[in-house]
Length: 221
Image (tube, rainbow, N blue to C red):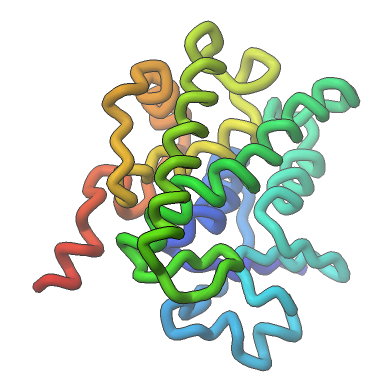
């Protein structure tokens, strides 16, 4: 039975999973959710994920409802790949960055992008954007970029000296930070890391990566 991935094309968290699937060359059935139309909070989808979030991976009788768990499951299932590890200490090093993506990145550059380009924080803080939320997201976003810049100054990759799901988990919303008016220009190590990820075999971009103003320009048209 083919696994099913419930996704939204412009969701960075969904993109993480789709990107890993591309790197692994693994096929699943993609089911696009009308996120802007709030399909994720409809009764049918809430049966699959009571959290009302994407992505969701359903593989047989197993359901994973968070990008971090999906990345871990896929990388671990395809254990001959280099994206995961069988060593517990190395797993912990990867998970450290998954946690960073779910906290610092989520409530920083993720939230600023959501407010300015999608008109709502979309992070469990409600659906209304306001100046305080945006200001706090910008402060946290800049701090997270400073932390990441320091980590990448002497390292090409975030964990284990090679590309892992740590990089995939952190990459999308950091690379899309300009959509939230947070510039990447002060961070040469981050920009070089983004360039390395983009050179990996089977990489594909997400909307906004090369044109951070596309949603605001479309709204103004």
